[in-house]
Image (tube, rainbow, N blue to C red):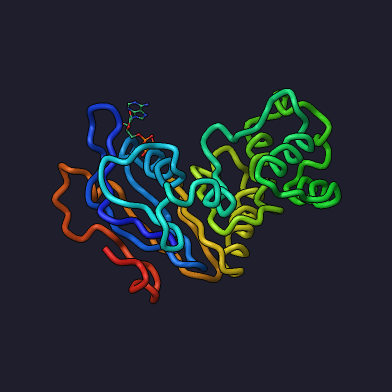
Length: 228
Ligand SMILES: Nc1ncnc2c1ncn2[C@@H]1O[C@H](COP(=O)(O)OP(=O)(O)OP(=O)(O)O)[C@@H](O)[C@H]1O
């Protein structure tokens, strides 16, 4: 369970949003929406402990991120805008390094299977700097296939992907939710889950200049799990 209480975040001089409250239990996905610049990436980075918070509290399984420190990162998979891949390494080498950095010692067969599943079998031995944007994104997302993290935080995971890859990533997310994992993602696309619980949060509604009094929109019968 990820619990966000009374959270306010600032970038530079600008207060992006205030008094954000939600709980994300196991087996659920939170789709963070909002207009460009509303603070979606900022929120995700704060949830990863990568940015200071102006006010409020973030807890994972009942403990603050600060007190958990490295233990939190054992449970977390974060995909940011920059994909987190090294251009001089091949796709396979990137997966190997990413696995070791997260203490996930996937076997060579698991790594190769991940690349095959994500559709990179024909370019797994090329330096990733010469891959297309969509192929680079696939390398980054291949890590999901052997990830053992309970919480996936994904910033624009579908950007640059073709229709087939979008469907594959949606399926990986659905499987993760079905297995009791949690996912928070941003995307300007609609998100489809074939099982599990989907919540939506529009950050535009939390802007200090917005007066909307009904900030969270529920799309499932389990809406009581996400309170505002
Ligand atoms: N390093 C920074 N210093 C100051 N302001 C920043 C910094 N990074 C981002 N911002 C500002 O914070 C605001 C929120 O940015 P953020 O990237 O979180 O928005 P977003 O909702 O993810 O936008 P988009 O939909 O365009 O990706 C923007 O106005 C942006 O200019």
